[in-house]
Image 1 (cartoon, rainbow, N blue to C red):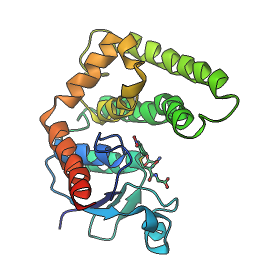
Image 2 (tube, rainbow, N blue to C red; image 1 turned 180 degrees about the vertical axis):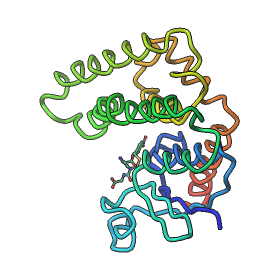
Image 3 (cartoon, rainbow, N blue to C red; image 1 turned 90 degrees about the vertical axis):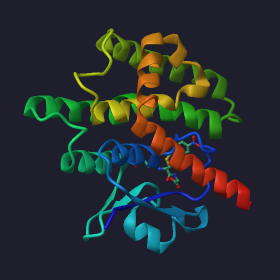
Image 4 (spheres, protein in one colour; image 1 turned 135 degrees about the vertical axis):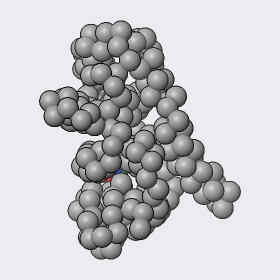
Length: 218
Ligand code: GTB
């Protein structure tokens, strides 16, 4: 039985593949595993049935059909990467480094990027918004500069494409509307390389189809 993941029934990203189910879809496509999707309407996200699966009432979740239920996109992608070839190197040290990049994406690079999204979405009317914005942007620039230095002219962060790159590319994509990524051409090219992967394209098309169908039915 294929695993079942959850995604927004109506994603606020309007099909841009920014919600975190995209990472899980992409990982499953990279390792060639089929999956089912259960769409969660906003009205049901904090209801007991979904909270039983995800303590914070969010997406994505992952159920393997054999009793395992997971939440947190990082844990889900790692689970997939550990069980199927294609996303983690065979060499144990390289494997640990790739997992390290997953953590770096989620805990070092993503937080200021999420801060920027939140600032633009829900803090615009605050009297301190205009003062806070450049501080957040400079924190992001700091991380992007450091990341660009480490990437250098390599295609991927540590040898072959890995779950670390998958996570980093998806985290960086959220900067699209800000223009910040364009200040770092090597990182913009890195993201474009990730997006060009056939597995990414399949995952993107699948999540876009959800948005298109929701629009058609609205
Ligand atoms: N740390 C968790 C993980 O990595 O899985 C975070 C999960 C999370 O934030 N999920 C969001 C959610 O369920 C969806 S992805 N939010 C509903 C809630 O908290 O009640 C975040 C997201 C949402 C929208 C956009 N967008 O519109 O561009 C981008 C990303």
